[in-house]
Length: 205
Image (cartoon, rainbow, N blue to C red; front, side, top):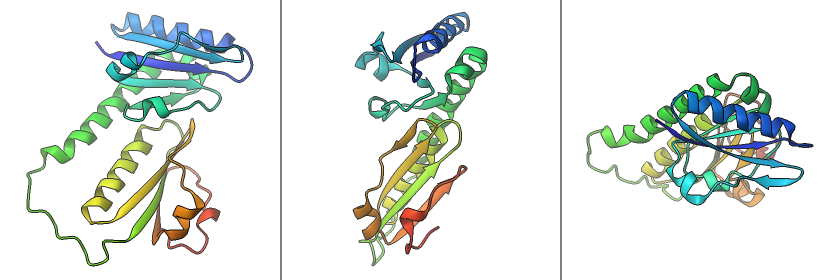
């Protein structure tokens, strides 16, 4: 049995928000899981998730048609869909969210499974600073996985790196102009369009 938390939000009223929350909660129960849904709308937030619920959750489902803050879920697997998909494809949304969570867990465990070897010596130009952008068109689990992989690889090589993640719920860890300006190179890892005008004059990969 999985523990799931969800956030619903729509830009005007709360009809779709309530419908999406009810659909997810009922379907999750039928599937043998527990799901708590927080609803956000023009009237404010209802049924707010607690820190304990978020901490214990196996995955977070974000079913919104507007941007919502992701700060509370920084260390959790997140799956993002529209409110319409949450209402019409409820079971598939839950199954895909849990599958994404398993992928994130497997990716996090993979480095630990590798045999430990001698640490690689830091290169002579270890002071280099890199920036990156990861993006995918639907959810954000793959986006976070790619960002984490890039940061770990950069650290292993002795570099500093900051990665901006972009998904259907907006951008997180946004790069500043100062950070872009001092970057030695920019890595774009995206399955969706990324505006590169901010990186004019920079070496792109």
